[in-house]
Image (cartoon, rainbow, N blue to C red; front, side, top):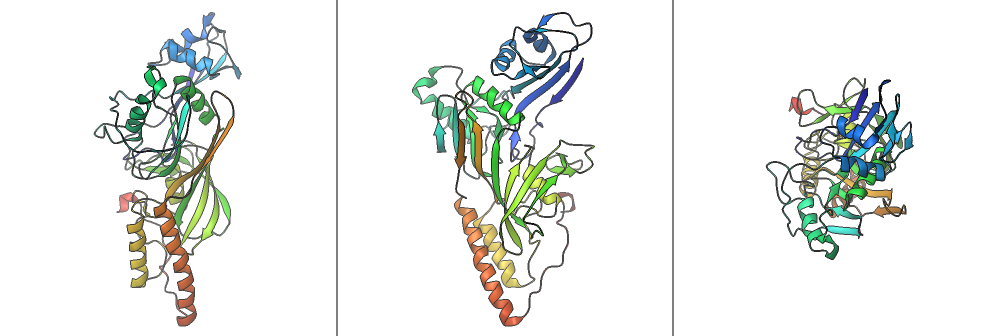
Length: 374
């Protein structure tokens, strides 16, 4: 028997992943001597802490494949069968306290809720941080809805955003919706686009960043990129330049995978940390001039945007029950818009100053410091 697992990282990072997907994927190959056995019993005996009901729910959602074909929970496993199952990641054993916290709801029905998360809002309670999260707000909201008297309706996470990343998230309200959405994420059938302001300029108008992402071997609270693939998980980020400001660039990012801190780690890896990202070296002047006036300009930008400049702008997926294509778009939050506006004005005045003085004392090229070097 072969057991190949694809589990989310244990989240002892300071924040959740900027697009961390929350599902369990298992793959088994039945032994040659395997006797005929219902697949729900087979999987329950091999997956730790997986109830038979949860396995049957995965089958109902079409998330159990045998030899690449979906099967029902009463399918009899045969020798040599290649079995794959995707299940929603189970919640941690933390009491969920309802709290009346305002949230920006873009869409809601009996199966799911789509929200535009504000920067600064933690998604899920964790040890030492039990309250004030998005899940606390959703538990309160669901409890106030007429149909929420049913015990099986609760917030079901299938992905998360960083505390300081703003933007669109989908949360399931039923276990079957959570299981089906988890399969969509696993199959890369979720369309999502981020906008990020990053340090530096790009030679090309678009590109792709590839490199395995895993916990830093020196500091487990940050993620590193491992280009040789010997460690970490495969990750791909596509980007396109939206607007150039010389010393910083507004880019659109399309995720092909959903790893912890993927965008932030990938852009640091290629020498373009996200603007004001204090975890990945973007909270210092990395490009620009040596003039005091410029340094004050950056300080003012950091004050206007006291977090990393990253926003989950769009999200598209097929509804887990109706199959209808859903698509949601959001405006950049006010703090990012203000800083981008300041950069537009800076570029105009910089050109005028250069024409008058013929001088532009730029900071010498050097890679950003790593957290270990700080």
